[in-house]
Length: 141
Ligand SMILES: [Zn+2]
Ligand SMILES: [Zn+2]
Image (cartoon, rainbow, N blue to C red; front, side):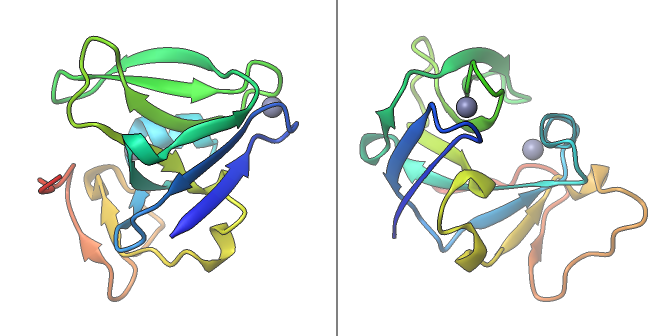
């Protein structure tokens, strides 16, 4: 599906095609810290379909458990995290992980899976009917 969104202050905007068959709830520590909450919702888009439509984000390069480097894009004015992108050095897999709370379509997006459940907060039960993964699942993309 086509989505669009942006940061809190409006300086950065984006559009993308989104694979809504995978809408993830991530319980990893990074998502807890960066979202200020118990989990963060993200979904993947093909890198080629994603584009910034307004402004230029700032980037922070983060090394994932897998060893690959992901570029975290955020607004330099208001600090909203928008997505992670493949780094220039490490372009595979070429997907964008969009922080879904920044999308206009966010209220319609229904989670399909929970990942990094190993670090789920103790007071939160697994959601009924959602696939459960202790860490990052192997995805065929
Ligand atoms: Zn902003
Ligand atoms: Zn996470």
